[in-house]
Image (cartoon, rainbow, N blue to C red; front, side, top):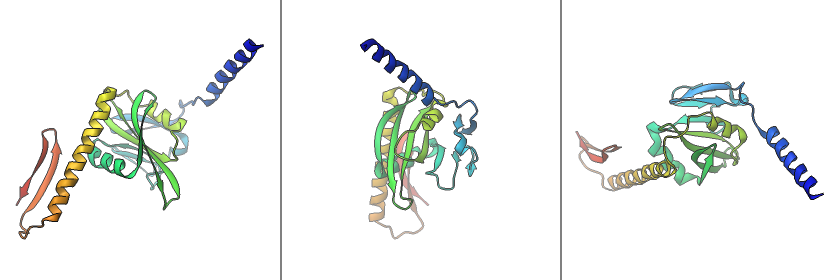
Length: 199
């Protein structure tokens, strides 16, 4: 009798897994950054699509795939400070799942940061859960070239740079200069943090 129950439960698990599996073979694709992502059918007609972003709706929280390398420091720093964050693994990709509640839209929003190759991306969608469709979009991307430690170290470094620049900007605004012909600058690059005064 116990064997029959175990066999029944195993068969039920296999059937449920097959039912939950997503067939994305007929999904459309969109190139964002250096990746070609599969796009769920309900988001196949975008409001805007270019190299940096695939936006299904004018409201980017509905569904968006974004290439973030050009603005990784500003975006990641902002997300860390304005959302709840959790480290996760999605379809073999190390990731950070951000969640927040938007009182204007009266909706929960998610953003999932991950890497593909040596580039960073995020997917935004309505809700708090990582849905099967979101997992399928992540799965359609290339594997990350970063180890688990490298992935999180890069993001942590970007957040430290974000904090450093905000601290410098805050100090600069605390001590305004009388000379309007000059302005200061702060930049972060592969050679570290640079700041100075330009005429």
